[in-house]
Length: 409
Picture: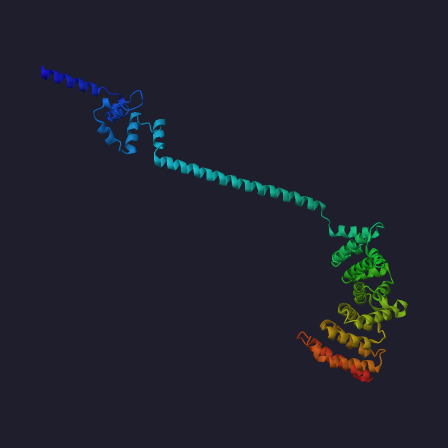
């Protein structure tokens, strides 16, 4: 009976242990022991006699656990439970966090790039709108010239408006094409500018003379238009040369020089036809007065000396040139102005052969002044030998006149 009792007990134990769930069969009883919990959620160790087995299997790799669970669900690797367990591994969680951070960074970069592109698009739209407005409102040079002439013709225009108008005209008529438009019937503005040169406001008058000088230096047709508007305009320019301000005097000299040098105008149209050459005489007197003031206003003297040669060449005017040129050369040397010296020496060479009204002593004195200042003059030379040659020629011409020997001329 004892043996039979032990056998019965043993058989009962085996029956009990073999009565397991399918999950228990898949894991060899291990999962049953791990999940045998009481109502309080704690593991009931009294139902297991092999806690050590469970503890030893706690060290199994995650892959073994996942493989067992995969088998228990019929090998469905897409099972929600399988995915959850797989995704909960430290490596998977780390990768997930890294992906989330990368996604945030990518999203931020995309947002920034998108904002920058939108800003560029807005800016481009603004520029296009501004360009359309500018092109719509932009005036052509012809429009500007036409408006300037209207300002001169308008009796309600003040002096400031006239100054702006004349400044625009002076800037534009330097161009041959714009000067042609200004002369033509489309604008026909030359008479208005000529009339402005006689304005009682010195600034307006000076600005008008500057506009005449700018246009007349460009083409003969402009000069013809000026003389057509006022046949005595050369005489008017000389009147402006005879009185300050100096800025207007200089502009009048330049304008008269353009009239004198322009092809098809020449001596007859500008000088001989006006008071029997009186314009040329008055011009020469005004120029000599400017030349004598070289030390005080070298710029004005330089412009005057350039015109002196043309006045003498074209009109053969008499006058005390030697005295004026002597003062000019001495003044230019004193202020160290090589440009004025060069123009004064050229004037000596041009005037001396004509044996004008100066006394023999005046020409002798001029020759001595040039010889005495020769070294100082040569120091202003630009190493091209121009001044050296002019000095020698001027001394020769001045001394030749003083000896009254025309055969040397």
